[in-house]
Length: 554
Image (cartoon, rainbow, N blue to C red; front, side, top):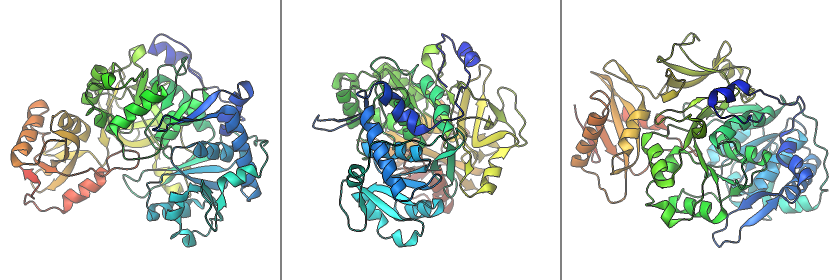
């Protein structure tokens, strides 16, 4: 499951072979393998602003996860039961994951940013038996616990709360030895709910093999991780596939320490501080966060950052952020692509010459991908269609939890449909230009929002932007831009006209936004993706009369 060392992309793809044991347990490979070899090896480091960073070794991770596994079994957790982890980036989160995998349970990571309704939906739909959380998470559960008939226990980290169990006390009360079950690589281990950008969230159920399936893609994005001195960090919540599988678990399998930091609104200066003060050399940073980091002037003069690699995914990175990273950080960002259901199937690897501004990358080692039409037929290079991945594939999900109909709709034959539109060029690079429902149809043209948004954020007044289609009686749809301004700029009709001209002259006459609306913030999922569906709904309900912060042109 590890990449062969090769000096060109073609040889790397040609010589890679999947070699996943039939008996494979994520908990054992994350913690126990290294604990047997080097129990004192650093596994986790938690950032503290005062410089007193906490550390956890592989030996400690093994022992504490064994204690928790024993505790969960004593509480009645059996193989196949769902155990929710409602926690921030922390040692307890990793201990929880490893313990659940070892006993054969199904880990259900949940973001603390979720409100009560979102939590209730996921906990009820999954039938979670236990929730491990902190005091903040517990406060969110209080009003909904009566609506969760399957929930038997709530375990709280760092606090004693009536009616709940104390995490630390449970660990202290149980032995540090545990015999992990001999799970098959195809046994269920992890369930991550989709972000719900295109409908109600669905539980994507993954087998133990999903971790092995991520290794080659992470190694490509991080330039043959591990290298001596490597240390990984991501601002992404570990409750999502990005933080969990693009960074945390693969790094630990490879013996690379992972830095954790408390969840907060993303602060670009703090991000540089974390990386500088803990010696981070490898990072997974989503495009939105990278765009915000562009605000920091001369970051390498301000912060002693020694990054070796940056991987980025979640939405289109764009040419502007790609160029900034090369200029300001001296790093070529390796963009990659995947979904909760099937992750890191396309990627870049600059050291092997696989990098192209505006493109996601090429097919990553071990996967088969194509651009297909609506009938499941492969399209020739240069043709626009849907990005699809062929099964079987170790990184591919088992199915949607209790939703066979949605699972069936995800496939045409052996092609898993991503719902994303793209083009593969003659060299094999894939350019992503939007989800099926994000594509804008205007005057007979099909327009992807990614290129427009990339052009918009290259304007000095714009910090973030999203482009959507607004219904129009004449053109079917017009392009509308929602814009968050950079500090020091104020909304005005003059600025809106300037922005329209900026896109018109840099892209084309049919792609420029005929309406520009200035807003304070874009609606985002907790993974940092723009929820364009909400903006489309907003645009659809608007009258044609310009609003105070909006300027239109026909």
